Image (cartoon, rainbow, N blue to C red; front, top):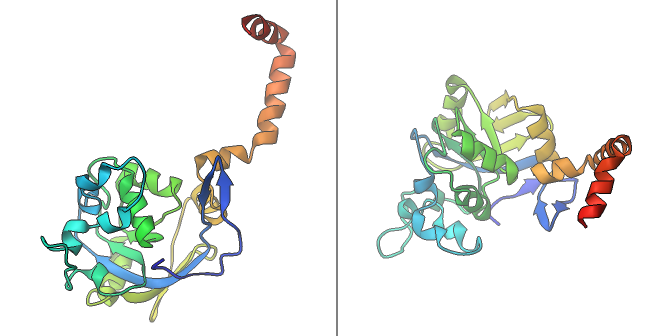
Amino acid sequence: MHLQAQAIALPAACFWNRCLEPFTRLSTNAAALPAANIDTDVIMPKQFLKGIDRAGLARGLFHDARFDANGAPRPDFVLNQAVDIGALLTGPNFGCGSSREHAVWGLLQFGIRAVIGSSFAGIFADNALNNGLLLIRLAPEVLEPLHRKAQDRPTPITIDLEAQRITMEDIDIAFAIEPAARTALLRGLDRIGTTLLETDRIRAFEQSYLAARPWLTELSQRGA
């Protein structure tokens, strides 16, 4: 793994054989990719969508930017300049383009656990949350000092989701996040896992609903 997550007190939550690692606090290096409108075709080129599983997507991440025509790493590309990069600082509308979830899978396989930007494409944001990738939205004027710090090289950063704070060298800023998304990330829950937390209430509703409508049970038994 490329990242170093600290103080993760909760185990991975698993539902239907799917496990997400809870996110509480991450200390890692942040790489700056400030260009606007970096789309999912750039994040995960189409040739890496052919497999029937998710294997090998870490190599596919930003493949055409990371590697030359002979497959050798490009030393000037920011993700090739450090081995512990767990966060990205991006430009506006990151993750636009096609809806491929492989872009999020590739980021996570590479070791990216958080992306900080001014805005994100809607489907990309949904995919990120459902896979445990933290997206942090900052106003451009708040984000810009972070970009300046990391513009020449990946730079140490700490992201504390519990405290909702980002620290980078002498910068210490707060960030907002939708409460339901924060809870899901802290607990390592996707949408199915979040729904299954309400299993007892769902079963209680089913029982009371059917008790008030016994003919539904009778029809079901006849159909069986």
